[in-house]
Image (cartoon, one colour):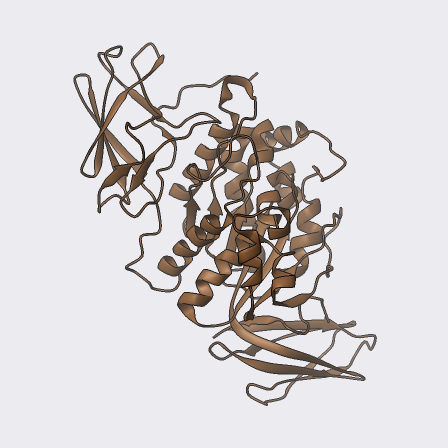
Length: 445
């Protein structure tokens, strides 16, 4: 049996889940019996491999799954509920032991037998693999402190609201660029992405070759039924930020293709940090690529973190808000909790009247607010394409901008630097995403 199908696992509820494995017998009859219905299913192995589907009920447990052929495997302590896959680089991988707000308190109370973790061991491969290393464990203070903090707080929020078991698979690797998580052939057949991938620097701590993390850490679990994805990555693509407009949507479509379903994909916009990059905008371009992905790719959602970052630490320790904000998207979009406001303000359009610019936002129906005396990080430009800081004022659901240095504004940028610390929120306390209204060329060479 693959390691993802093992003791303590969580299976997706109300689904036809895949059960598969291998046998040394080339033409063997395999019998599978689940304790939730006690109905045996018989299938024939073909050249040593076998696979079938089995219906799961609504969330609950515990259950067993018995697989019999020339020998018997019994998978024990199974729960049925909602299963999510978390992936990306270090901010997804980051554990409470590595640093967390109120770490001791959070670890001590992490006694949730209905949350289960499966952490994939970091490996790379030049060819797609059938299995990987990892094990399902029950959430206890000891297992939680060594698991993804973002995934844990996401899962805990779901558990509190849905009251069904939660399975959290994490397959992440600190420092990895997006290219390693996409099938290699999809990168190589696009000249722009192929060129961008060639610019990635070599490090001994993580891979850079397209596809190698996908092959070893994602492909083996694409048969495993899940409810959706959460993702936290982007920092390492500052080396090729413009290609992220293509590569990030490609990752989403690639994974959905492999799971054969348009699964929801919720992700975190990277936080402000002093990267010391050219023009101080490489990370800002990645954030814009993330925003455009959310706006253009169906069933995606973006969590903004410009209020909880740390300019001196690329691993901000407030993982609670990150996980909970990701959960808001899932609760609203997947689990029917329509009264939840799940996003901060997202720019929708601008209106210009002489030297006054009015900005309209989505997710601002309850009104906007600022934290601090004055709104920050708004800039306007005229035909000369030179941006000047604007005086900004909230008027209901809108923001009004003026600058004495720009008589005829034609473009606006908000928080469009690597280190921007804006202070615009909706009245639910969710921060506004950075944005730019122009498409002017930015030369990072």
